[in-house]
Image 1 (cartoon, rainbow, N blue to C red):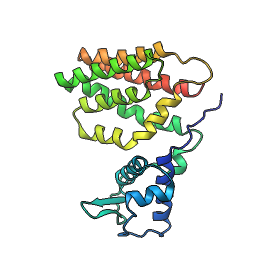
Image 2: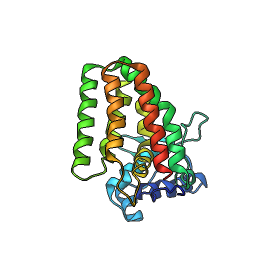
Image 3: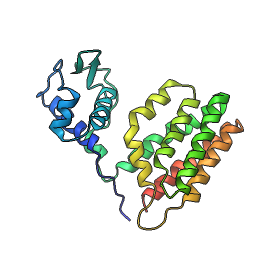
Length: 228
């Protein structure tokens, strides 16, 4: 079956529109963005959507915020962070590209978590996994809980760049997780939970190689589920 991609979220639409305005010069470097309320009215969305869009633009280095003054278009910089352009984020094979991008980082993060996680971080991973089990048992798809579990692994790697990476990909990861839950037929909840449990157990055992393998297996299986 051909791969599909989730429809862009409201925040994605706002990000794409503001990005175009910045790229084509309608909003030059130093220009002040309208207030959150003004943007919400302009796009017909909630303030929460605007906050998410502003956060994404800031993470991409396109804008900067100044306390008490608002948000401004950032000056072009050779050091501008890596960003995923809207046309790539909405491409038919976007889910596959995101999973491939995540694979190396997630496998490494799992290995580092097995080696470095504190007791508190291990407890948080257990909690996140339990929350995912509860969500699925209640009939949900567990996407938000799944994302929280992977954020927990990034935290447990004790390398702030992994946390920044997961934060940067944010809604892209959420969309790719959603797409790895096949539609039309019941998705294999036990399989997905088992993959996460294998990662968790390896990290709890401090087994670096097993954590790497479990994370790789999970990401590879997610890719396969997206292609169904």
